[in-house]
Image 1 (cartoon, rainbow, N blue to C red):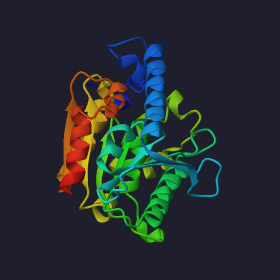
Image 2 (image 1 turned 60 degrees about the vertical axis):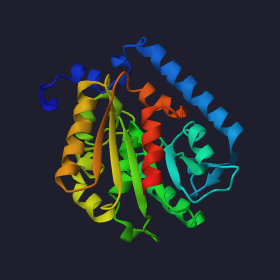
Image 3 (image 1 turned 30 degrees about the vertical axis):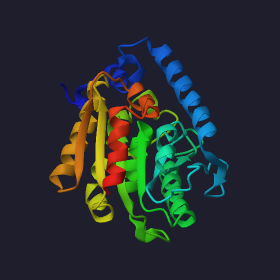
Image 4 (image 1 turned 180 degrees about the horizontal axis):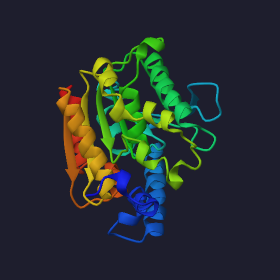
Length: 282
C-alpha cells in the first residue's frame, strides 16, 4: 500500500473516514446505527448499576465523569475508563468492575492539547477518589484509543499522583496524527505539525516505556477498518513490541470500525471476554 505522504488529499480523507469502509450499511446509516447502539447501551447500563452522573474532575463545563458502580459493592476487581459513553458497563458491572465514562471538550471548543490534558487529569481525579480500587484499566475507541495511548505516555512527575495503570485496550485508534493534518478532520482542530507530533503516541513510546512499562496493552483493529487505520494499529503494535513492552495485537474478524466497539455490551463477545480475563489475571 502507498505511504500516506504519496496519497492525494481525497484518498487520504477517504482512508480516515471510517464510515466509508463498513460492509454492513451505507456511510450515513452506519453512523446513525452506531449512535443508536451506544445510546441504548448506556441507558441499559444505567438501569443495571448505581450511577454517579456528571461528577466534575476539573473546573471546565466539559470536564465531567459518569461512574457506574456494581450493586454488589465488590470494588476490588478493577476500574475501566471508557470514553464518552457508559454502554461498556453492561457486562462489566456484573463482574464487580467500576466503569468510569470520561467526557472532554471536543473540537472546535477543545484543542488537541486541551483534550489530552483533560483526559490525563480525569485519570488523576479517579485515582484520588477511588484509591481502594485494585487496578486501573483504560479502554478507548478511535479518538478515545488515541487519548488512552496518550495517557499511557504521560510524564506523571507533572501531576500530584502516578496512577498504576494495569491494562489498556486501544481499539481502532490513530497513533500518528501527521497524516490527518491536511484533511477535513483537522479543520476544527487546527493542529500544526508541532502539535501533531507532540500528541502522537507513536512518537512517545520512550515516555510510555518509562511511565507504563508494567501495563498490559491490547491493540485491537477491525477486519473492515480502512487500510490506513489497520496500518496505524499494526505499526504502533510493532513499535511497542520492539520496545519490549507487554503488548498483544487483536485483529477482530467480521467487524468494522463501529461494531468492533458496539459489541462490548455483550458478555460473550471475544473482546469482552479478553477484557475480563486481563483484569482477572492482573
